[in-house]
Length: 455
Image 1: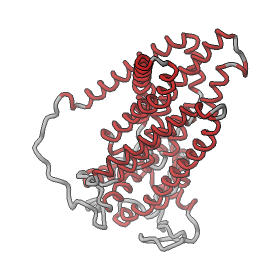
Image 2: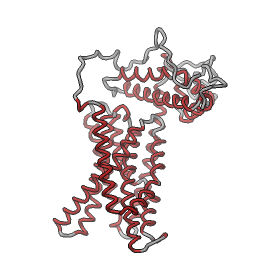
Image 3: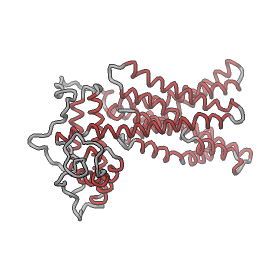
Image 4: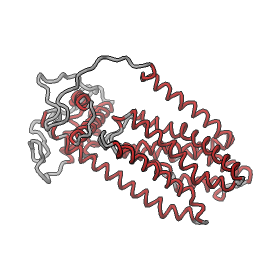
């Protein structure tokens, strides 16, 4: 079987989309065609955004290099890169239930590393100099800038990326996990640039003082920023992302909730950031006290929250997709298989082993579209679906239908491997086999033993 998705047409009487009273009995009538203004065209927006980020990147590069020197910049760049892949991988792992497009993550990282960092450097420097001039007390100005000005400016600058994704990529921003991932990746980019500046400056100090080894300023800065607290900036901004995620779950008519939760998350992020920056004012061991008493417990609490949210999303998939299995869009085993991360992984591995990487990618896309469909139906049943519910549902069903021949054998295999022998409760869809999860008596065609397209 070829690795590309089949182009099978729909049956003469295609299955209905929903069977239990989804909102919208039919697609809305098409209105008169309206030509978009030139500034509303996609290529104009992408071009303007790319240009803005590129200019910001060049300016921030010049500013950091001027502050650290070329050698310090290269050392800072090398050391600051170390935690980035681990943080990105962690956020991507959290997003495995309904993975968002990579372009959103690239935008968020670029915004944090370029635009947000530039805004922070310029605004913080201007505000600190203004306070020092007005009060004639540079020491107090530095303290006030670090504990008050910097948290406010930096969190607002990072929150701007979350807001842009929330407004312009609304289909990809549907809940708390999306907010966590978008905010975390943005903050990872911001911390990357900030770490280059701090580590490069520390290296320059060691060059002047002759510090080397463990006793050097560079080693101390690396230990504090890279080893002990690589998650600091992501932890602050994730609070803002959770606020936007709760707002995404609210109905359109809940205006107060849709505004109050993002603002509350932003204020919490500012407060935690200010406490972190001001920890040195609590004495010699103030940093370690704040780290142990606040940062570690809050990090653990948020980790538990996002993992619990991820499990809740999987339960939503298992609860919503059986309606489509009854209607004929999905096979009876798929709701169970798509609601298990282990079964999903086994399905992708099965497809890769028998039909190559292209088939595994098709299975991964099938899993993502099915998850989006489950969340769409869940929002519809709770009265939170938008006006494009019917259109979006049909789009997702079309994507699944085109990939069914590539995905169903793999998901069928995964369901048989992972399903328990005795179901906990009778499922609401037809049961065919001993596993109790709809395993059909006549299995779908398996992949051939030999595939000329296999890589």
